[in-house]
Length: 399
Image (cartoon, rainbow, N blue to C red):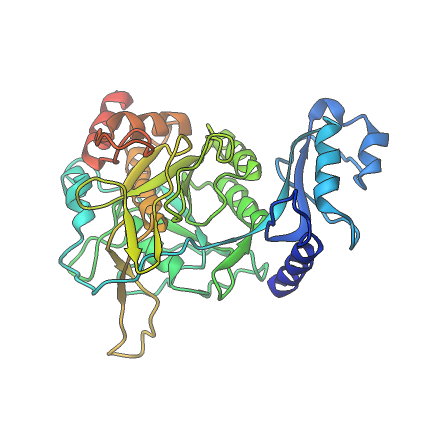
């Protein structure tokens, strides 16, 4: 399925290759949109774009339009926006796991991020509740990993549209371990080691997915009762993500999303801040913005007004996919990136919900931001997340 979508993407790019006025965008040849409720009766306008409104159109936050082959998507999008019949119209973009820095050697005794955010101290107050579920929109989670057994719920595979919980890459299992690896004498520990994890697979073996699949995953997580949904992919700036985030918030679910690893200052116009999504930047061991440079290549955490909060993003050791029948298998790996900053914040959010599951997503976000350590780095939001301060503040607010 994704292979065919990528083929459409390349065709769409080729159609615009000679245009000097359009910015090439890797997409599936489809558009995502939401009809303004007050314009649902404008049937003639909607029909002109090949859209037949229905009773579901008024509340679905993300809808898909697949135009006929050869239609100029840029012109169609512009026409739809000019009609003012839609809250937003965006491309169904192809998104990826953010490119990470090269992995360093694995040191299971050096989970430095726990010291930075005071995880262990927070566990004296609350180590998480088994009633709190964190959904991981990613590449699946290895449920029989020695450090995740008992933490992983039956999930859903949005790629195959089935309940098969196979893993397509290491990425999702790494993310899951940072959130909820068990606190024991084995391997590593997650920030919220007693919570449950809901695996929702959205990526193929190349680590690629689509914006529609991301937004479907966010909404499915909310429908399944997850308190937090972690998305460690590109695409945080999409209006479709903001719409899905609003849907999730209204269901009581907080959306946490990685800021991306291009090391760029993102303007407010290109990366608008969403009140319904917590965007997470990455820091290093000295509470500066995480960056890297190798020869002619460089990268690091994106930054700018869209970032709400930051978390460690350098040399984070966590669980890896392995063959449980192989006694020599490598069960852990170390990597860097905002893909791994986001789950640290998701873990702290889960601790806050564990204090009081009746908190609203806005309550939890407020606690996260107000309790963050003020590191004085521009473009990284309220500061670097602090689990101990967050849990203490949550206890105060719950009284």
